[in-house]
Image 1 (tube, rainbow, N blue to C red):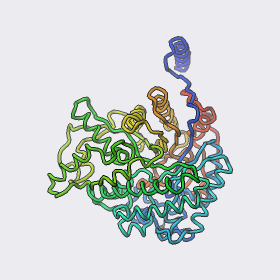
Image 2 (image 1 turned 30 degrees about the horizontal axis):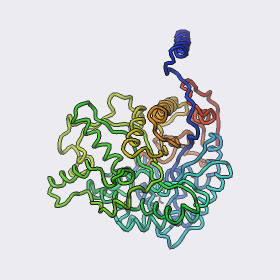
Image 3 (image 1 turned 180 degrees about the vertical axis):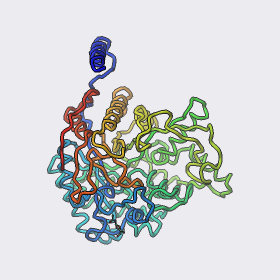
Image 4 (image 1 turned 60 degrees about the horizontal axis):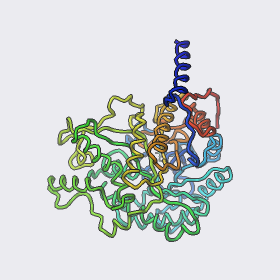
Length: 505
Ligand SMILES: *[C@@H]1O[C@H](CO)[C@@H](O)[C@H](O)[C@H]1NC(C)=O
């Protein structure tokens, strides 16, 4: 068998050279493509009640028995609030160009409001930024990655339109304190996940179950809050700080299961619900919510006896205010789902709801399901999603701010390496063959962490974290060694597999 493989490999190598087929081709990365890894504050910091930090909605939620699948919480997680210098050592080991991390709002502003800035809180992030820069690593900072101060949730959180004021005030604190050194700001991470899962179903904090109503209200407020933070940067900070500011949107791909016109159209509708909801108002030339969504939700609302659409209107003034408020398209991507009308029955999902508004049956076709199903490996989906952004939004600069694969453990993670290789290959196709303007690639995640409702059980790390060890020792997985080599080579070698070596931090 082995010999046969060698003969086959040699044969392929020869045919590749002679026929110039793309088999096993080594691909150099485009000049200037930056490589990094990402984390988020609640998922790695711990220190949930350190100094004067107040509760975030994820502290509250994870403390309610039964909410987190494996019964864990975010009290300590990786203890990065204490051990961040080891995180930096790991980043250096990988050789990344940048590190995307997020800031905990209740750590910096314990009341939620900007009346009092925590010295410990802002000091922590200031040191982190300084030490990253001292090590030649660029900080890419997400202002909000879901850990809203509980005090603001008590006032309605994202369902309260005043959150646009609160978020602008918070953004100002961050620009003032860190903007001299931070040159890439991401306002919100994945509005869909935090809102549809948090206000529309029982899955995420804050657990406001108002499907098809509260979630849609929160989306409008989140878009306005984002726009406020961007306009603030644009007007008062851009000139002196010379950075960029934008939003990150989960842009998994959605498409029709079959070629019937009905399924194809369902795929377009699902993609609008998934990503267009957040990106169309900001990146399209017309602004506002996608027409398909406006029409669908208005029709269903009328059918259901609502005197007005459950999707709040954006006034022309609001449309104009939100339009154009991102210097780049922050793009997170994990997998692709397929949508069909076949087998869909009214009442499958609660009425009203986001899922009912789409009105489809979904699946992953016959692709091998990943251990965490929403990371099922469908590499051409990322190329399609990048082209969807390019075609719909006039080819903006894209920062791929997350991409990764979830398992339930194991250090010899060849499946994760295969995922990264295949997705990077598809991304290079999108860049080189399709002309998509991708400026960064970010692997999710630096290390295992608190994966929201899945708790500590779902593992996305290049580094494995020992959560039973008080020191939270981090151990390089095979994928960490692979990513390190990928960064060093600045090329994608489909054949390369590292030798395992023990590397602890
Ligand atoms: C986390 O903190 C909460 C609140 O004090 C506590 O109930 C819970 O037991 C803590 N979790 C762990 C794992 O100690």
